[in-house]
Image 1 (cartoon, rainbow, N blue to C red):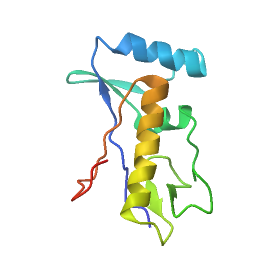
Image 2 (cartoon, rainbow, N blue to C red):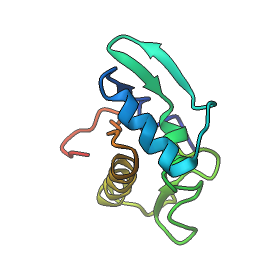
Image 3 (cartoon, rainbow, N blue to C red):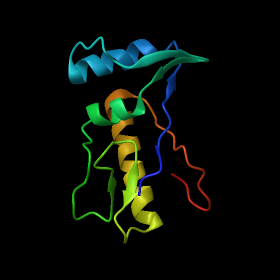
Image 4 (cartoon, rainbow, N blue to C red):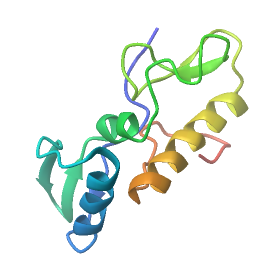
Length: 118
């Protein structure tokens, strides 16, 4: 059962926004439908939109994986029944690092973790 998002929507400081938007344009072309909103400290972007445009699809990395992205939305990490904390953390890091590599935006987990670092 899914309960909610794993990553929060990132706030990009105003001085970094042009570079991030350039990286988005390079990856997906000109898209004026980028979900973004004014926020304290900069512009808030959609984590789910960034995850998908970075190449992570619903159900990533596949049916055989113990931990994967939800088949309903890319913001949720799911345990298929046998995933360990290590599996979930590895998946979260892969998605986080992938988005950062492509767009220069670091995602942060929404859940509070105990005795593990994402």
